[in-house]
Length: 400
Image (cartoon, rainbow, N blue to C red; front, side, top):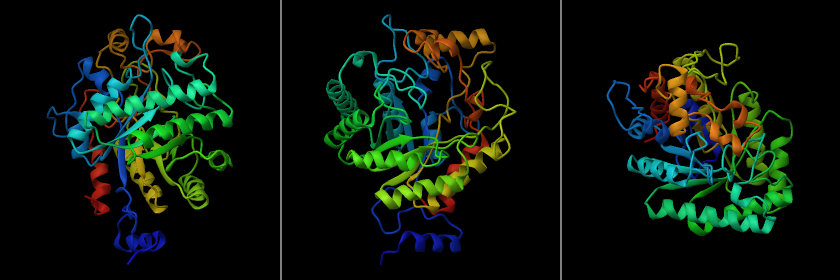
């Protein structure tokens, strides 16, 4: 006998567990995922990861053992200058995603592929077209986006990577690949969605936005997607405690999309600092002065993940991805040593080479990682006790 979500959640509350299994629907088990896009660049610079017992181990095995069941990886089209210098941020081309995907699959985790459709960071403040697409009209750009998506996904498929979800654009509040009108944005979303259906028909298609705290914003985005007939399965949201309002508001705006448009929802990015300390001689997004809902300690970090997972599970959401929980200091003991590693291996936020493509942002603020104090590993690569929160959530929810 099927139970509806409300009844299943009520039963779960009585039992002291989370209702994460879809309650009668053939849906994926609750996602406890992590973005780990920068791992290869850090390892190339000499970083080694250790489990909570202090033993050296493949970081993806550490994550799988800790209860993580999905890895998210960003993909940029061509994050290199003409001389082959990487832009940094992990130099996240499709080859980087392929390496990560193989390792994630080896340890039983699925991959979420996050296409930015840019040569570097795409976010609400900038949605720059890749170099190769600049000057194209919208039809040419849609064709190029379709081809790039198909080719990339085929590489992953042919390598045996288990891709469970594909994100068509990253935090696309203000546009995608240089297009800012909804008519043109919808053509690009649709081209990406068609590429997923044609190449990996079993994979879920996600669109991704942020700023759920802005009144009416998510309803507007969902309306436009519906108006232009964009094909997608999952409406994904970033949700950071220092910027994006209350968990109750997040639940309300995502529930409205579920009920009105019949879409699944998830949190594609969240994070919380385990320390206020700067660990790589480069300023951080979250500092000692930043207001956060829990203390900037490993215990506070774990409490945040539990709170977000509970909030998403209560509304029948698909799950939560933690953003770049493996992005730690490059390993140098001085700023100069780290800078050499950031420039050589792309393990910092942006290299100096990125300024040619993105002069207004990377050209001014190149350097190290701004979120290493939000990782689940300390600056020496050893897993924090807070990494155990994923297994704890899974145990409490009776999930395998």
